[in-house]
Amino acid sequence: MKPTRPWHGLALVAALGLIVLWLALAPPRAGEARVAPDSADAGRSASPSAALGAPLAANEERDPLRARDAADPPAEPPAAGPRGDELVRALAELGRLYAARDVPALQARLEQLLADPETAFEVLALLSAGAWRDDGAVLHGVFVLLESALVCYNAPGPFEAVDGRALVVAVLRALPLIDEPAFSGLIERLAAAAVGDRPVLDLSYLREILDLRAAWPERAASFSALFENLARGLAAGEGYEEFYSLLVTELSDPVAVRVALAALLRLEDGRFLPLAEELFRGAESAELRAAIAQAVASTAPVDRAAEVLARLTDGLQHAQLLTLGTRAGGLEALEREYDELAAGGDQDPLARRMLVTGMLGGDEGRLLAIATSDPNASVRAQALLTASLSKDASPAVFETLRAAYELRDDPALGVQPELAVMAAQNVLGYDTGGAREQAKGFLLWIAADETIAAAVRWKAVNTLRDWVAPEAFAGLAIDGEPVQ
Amino acid sequence: MLTGIGLTAAALASLALGAGARDGECADERATNVDARVVDAGHKTRCGIGVSIFGLRLAVLGPVCPDYKLHYPAHGECLGEPAEGMECVPAGTLEVRFEKCTCAQVTLLGTGLLVPDCVCAWQPGNMGFIENFKTKECDE
Image (cartoon, rainbow over all chains, first blue to last red; front, side):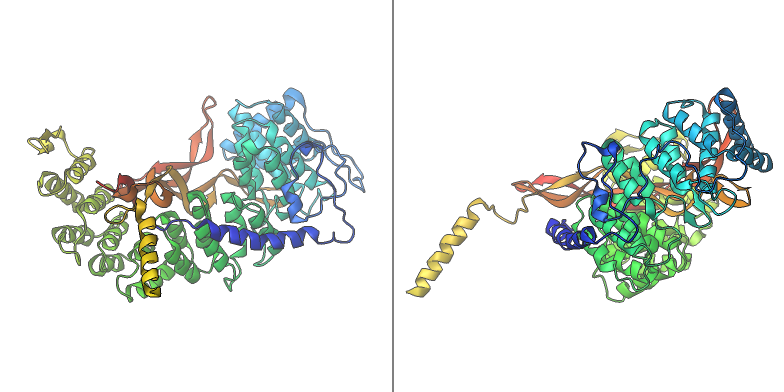
């Protein structure tokens, strides 16, 4: 296991801090002004968003929980929407229509309710006051209405005169006042709301999100979910400054790091990969390392991602390599990187093993070739594990497993008993043919073998308990203890 | 003479440095406990339904759903945490188990309504394994 080297992170932060200073001192763009943090943050430490140097919109004196009047009001004001009990009934109806997947009726009712933009603000105010927290149907109606409103009022079309941004800000400011389950549901839908492929909660709200997290540190982890789609719909390199700054200012937040780094890694030339590697090596938590690896796996060019993940892995990146393997070209990139490493002998077995974890769904023949030819026993075992995680696995998978187990004392060809039991467990769970019965017999054989360590024999027994009758263990004892 | 002084100085230095040393190498390091965690993997999709209102297509209204959730058990890692007289040693392997997630209709308690939700189910078997480490006294 590679120990962390905090000084790497400190040196990197120092270097990147110069960039933050440059951005903070950059003059405001023409027509905009810097505005001090609003009264909601009074008494708290300086807003972290100040480090971004992003100017705040100039007209912040408005009541954030009410709709904005348009500069050119529509010729006919919309009909007032329902209020009070009628509103609750309408929301419950929306929830029922959503649950029933009655799309035409749902669409028609939504159009009626959204015709009055004040309705969305009314719903938000009531939600903030604790209404309906225990009413599932009404809550789903709330989610459907608010997400629809966020999209409609922020998209080109009949509501261009409505200040959609005001609704977004109103939702952000209401969030701290809302309890579960509405809280998490609303955060998820706010982050996911999109006009086409562009999120409603886009990069222009970065300052508001950072201020929200700073003002409510006890809920900061939940608010981090608001970063999730900031980069969606952006061209490679778009928002570069903002994401770079986010990365620098929020180095301890795994979600912020993942989102910012993923946005930067989209650049085809992979110029930020060295930065990702340095951040990984200097990260002081498993969560941060996982976030950095996930950013690499999800957006870096696949060949470079496979190379970097293989180099960085500390044996805990199964999820990230699986993610890479599901991308277009990702599986092939993992296989190429494996071949390249294997050509160099047994110098980095951990890297090869982790590359194999990402090959789920890959060619069975290829995986079995690794299971029989890789110079390292753990890599061979992982190939058997990956190959056996398939309902379409052929009899050759179990046959290879059994042969490797019988050669367990041969370091060039065998697999460790403990890992053979794990692979047999996969065969039990996934095979629907004869291999399942063979795996049962295989595990009973291991359980009865007194040359095998007791812990491994017990593992075989415990694996079998859900698959065989208790009579199968009759007469079996491990280290003198009868198996029951 | 200078050589003699140098050798003596070197000997004294090695004695000083070695004052706390024991026979053999002792890393003076303990295993660090790492909490269990769950990590999403694969693609993410949204469960729910798509609607079209005022001519706008709202992609999908519903929760987000990953392909898999991988479960890493609590374990020990050798991260250089100092502990005099101790060492961080292998302690076997632990399974990485996983759930497969799909969008499904789920009953809202108390309402009888079925709503789209992300439902994750434990899968048989293991995605892979991790190495576990523990702390041991150097003299054992």
